[in-house]
Image: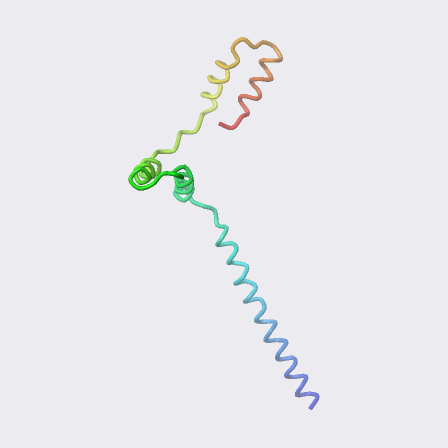
Length: 109
């Protein structure tokens, strides 16, 4: 009788050990899918949708069409940054200019 109980207990333990990893992997993949990064079109849609707050009907439809079809702004090149920062630094000299240029060129635009 003790052998039968031991076999049943061992079988019950073994089956639960095999079942646990399957359920753990299924629950682990669900949050990953929910937090997947947005692609550029999804990001654009979210941004345009937020900007269209308060607009209704044809006005909203026209705004969304324009917003979603707009081309992304070209990234600012280092050369363009240098031109802009130089123009803004007019009148500054020495350490003041150096500090300004360092801050201006390192800023994300």
